Image 1 (spheres, rainbow, N blue to C red):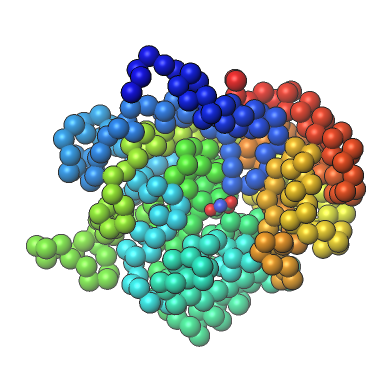
Image 2: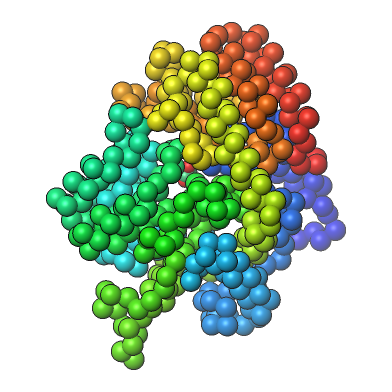
Length: 430
Ligand code: DSN
């Protein structure tokens, strides 16, 4: 190990890749709905010596010595998360949203149980029962979706639940732009004594800011990622609104009925994970502190205003937005009336400096690799300081590229416009 050398001198290849990625983030319009730009403080909290520390267990109950300082970071993260979401309990150790879901599911249900989640092709998530994911392989999955209007069909949900009697109902989505009626879901779940969970990975920041409904009071447990609208480091988290003794008959070795939080804790570690990523947990604590500030509410409010403005500007240019608009940070653009696929549109926009992802739309006739839509979101550009006026300009740029999708000179012109716009809203120093 050469202690004197800087990264750029020791490993110029990796250093250059990081520089290029910084330049890409600075100079392109980031519209991927699940991405955001963390603060320099969050970056600093991730790039530090806590990455060296093994801390299996939980604060004050570790399997390794020397944990007194990482304990401070994890306690801060847990306390701030509880405050942010008005929750009795938070586990900040899941490495990702998928890990959070896996540990949480198995806290409440068993291998082979019947579980109901939103169909991936209607906006759900891979871990909500896709056959290619652990969730679809380990559980007997059934699905609900949206109706022709693009809204979740609560009548369909109720009918399926009463007929199939799932043990667990999953709410939450990764490509659904409307608020979810958690209260109605809970009423339906209670009819068959099912547990109700929500995966709020996408709207977590908007919920923390109090701008859209929170599922915490209605769901038995909630999972999330920390890096989307919440604008923290890449990672996962499990929350319980109201903790209490479990009704699953699970006891401690001494015969005491375990709290739900104790079951979840032991499922995260040692159930599904080993050592927590303490540098990431420190960065989660910093991000939660940021999210507790008043300016985070303002930021989140602007995320929603920007999404509404972008949806409207696209509609004005004859683009169909699934469900006719958005209540949140994202929208799904159905490109079928333009005769375009998501795949070719994503590629053309990328060439023009606009980053989106292709996405299935409800009742899509294209495969998941081609798709008929793109998903667009505003959390990242709002972090840069862009507002409604810029959203209108961006809709115009998207339209120029898509209307003349094979015209390279249009893409070059739009790319230059993108760089000009990005330069007016600086991001990271190089
Ligand atoms: N891959 C994330 C998204 O883009 O929504 C969800 O895990």
